[in-house]
Image 1 (cartoon, rainbow, N blue to C red):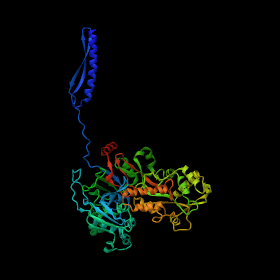
Image 2: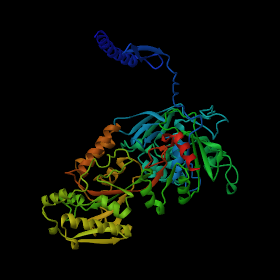
Image 3: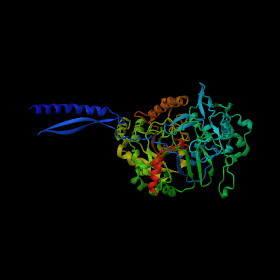
Amino acid sequence: MVIQNNLDLIIDWMKVLALLIVLILAACRPVQPQIIAVTEVVHLGEEQIIITRLVEIEPTPTATPLPPQKSQLPITLDLAFSDELSELDPQQASQKSSYDLIENLFVGLTNFNHDTEEIEPELAESWSVTADGLHWTFHLRDNIFWVKPSDPPPGIDELWDLEPIRPVTAHDVVHAFQRLCSRATGTSDTFVFFIVQGCEDVYGIDEPTEEDLDEIGVFATDDRTLEVTLNEPASNLLTLLSLPQIRPIPDELVTEHGSRWRDQAGDLASGWQTPENIITNGPYIPSATVFSEDGLLLHRNPLWPLPSSGNVDNINIAFQINEMDMFEEWQDKNLDVSTLPLDERESFLIQSPSKARLITDQTVFYLGFNFDSPVFREPEVRRAFSSAIDRQQLVDEMFEGRALPLRHLSPPGIFGAPPVGEVGIGYSPDSARLEMDRSSFRNCKLIPPITFLVSTADLSLLQAELVRKMWVQELECDEQLINLEQVDFGLLLLNTNPGNVDNRPDIWELAWPPVYPDAHNVLTDLLHCSDGKNRQKRTCSEVDRLLRQANLTPQLEERKELYRQAENLFFGGDGIAPVIPLYVRGNYTIVQSWLTYTPALSGGEQYNTYSIDEELKRLERSRSQ
């Protein structure tokens, strides 16, 4: 009996000790001694007693993992261009590949952030504008420099000491404007800068003198201060100043070498040699040794003072690679990005859809209304015809998905564009029938005949037939009353000109390609009742006042909100519906899994925003070998 009581007591103590052991172990850190429970069975005569003891033991040391180390090797972006080494003169470039290089080799007064679709300071660190909106003052950084092509010394993986030539100054920007406004330079889309005082006048002179050039309203009051005078208020100036065409270039070199300031030494016919004259000032600089008709190597500019969201140190670019060869190089992991050939598209999208990205351009395709038409004078009818169009079906049937449906006008990738799908009523058969019922016609079968004017392209006719079929299906329109007429493009523009009183159609197809990434170039330049094309012959209303106010508002966030309000007044549930936005077209780009970036839908690619997982890239390449 005594032994039994002792056993009960021992068991109770064992429970307490077990609880203490758990608490002690939980409180102990791995690097401290551990206490464990050791249980023994002791025989006392014929009885068994269970005894538990606490034993302290030394822990086995555990190696502390080291933090991940940044690769000691430079991170390289591998690209290929289908054309040859492009024009590097900002005032003479016109190809996408040229813009890609200029964007990375030359600084802009402002920068268009493709990720946020907003304007940021770059060479100009700040600016101000007078109350009348005509006089802008830009204050320039003093730490962006002209540098020659260079390569890091052997063994240098990070930044290296690079000798600058001199700072980029306001005088360089003045010289860029003078070249841009001179017609002989051949700058593309110079007309968008005619808002600058004197630019259009100089453009009209065959051989402008120094005195003529000095009349352009761009002046350097000192090395760091630039004054710009406009003909009219234009807050979109900040977007214009981000364009490749207005990047500053070295005044003294152009004066000394003329157009050969960016040429290479050696006989071009036998292959390009080391750059002789060119100097640059952007986030990357050209290699002094890898610079030929076959390829170009760019290095991160060690003197570039602005932060970069990407991690690319070098950019290796091969030239004159055809689409199929480029695709095969991508498959072999030798390129980070490639176009997707048409013949490979279907199978690739089935096998690797996550690696394909639809990159749209910014040309907006739309249908325009004649506001004098006996059919489309009423907004209810216009909204009904717009809501009855299934844009996704158009995209799928006409382009196999290589387009993005739109229900507002400003396309993605421009300042002031609302996110796709947030503004506008889009495809809604119920809304379409309700709007038609609210109109004076009450029923589409009662409308007068409609002339639907399209171009002679087969795709235009297919689109018109698909749209007409939707109107018949959703609104029960009489197909015989919707007459499709095909004319050449010149006659289409003539017949839809607002000054033309004869042969104006009721509705037509057109497209609008923005010249620069700003909603002003879409909403105002295309639709404003007096400041834009206004092919609809729409009378002025509140939305036109908002658009003018937007161009008088230098505060970027306020201007974005005004454009959003304008899109709602045009395409919202009670909108004017002056046109029917349809889609923007695009093509597929294929991207390796190790690369992250936001593509440039206008201007040039910004390689300093590209990020590469170097370890993953090395692993994937090793697997493919």
